[in-house]
Image: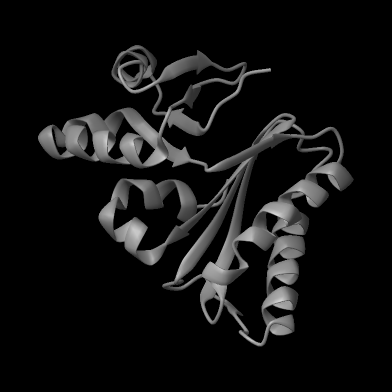
Amino acid sequence: MLYWNVLIKVQKHNFSPAYLLLEKLGRVYQSDFEDLLLVKVESIPQFLAECDRAFKKDAHLLNLFERIVPVTKTFDFQSQEEFETQAKEIVMDWIPMLADKKFYVRMHRIGFKDRIDRHEEETFLDLVILQELENIGKPGQIGGVDPDMIVAVETVTERAGLACWTRQDLQAYPWLGSGLLVPQ
């Protein structure tokens, strides 16, 4: 099993230059999926800052990538039930950040499409968050237009990664948003 905390979808025909750039930032793994690199970095904030510096220095580097999605929590799962249990546990830790906010859950799956339904899991996590926010008296709202927060969920076969990004994160790192806003 590859242990990663950054998922990178490379633009077609840019695999080698993307790999060379990323290996300066962390341990890079070639996945079993076309144009998909998985990276293990020591620090997500440091990774974000180093990528941002590189992209500001040479904006053409952005053309190497289709999506760059760091995640802050990862876990392995073998079933939908196991996925839901672990994902719920993670989002429950983020309830204080989501209080009184407009948010949405965005899931991208690579592999396991016959075992995990993206729409079903997004709805499941949306409802978990809404119910808990209601329970603590800090209701939230699901909203895909100009959200305060995005809960990003990435799966590559039986490994999942989750992150909670703020509007300020997406403004600071606009290249990050492209991986979170567009469903696949």
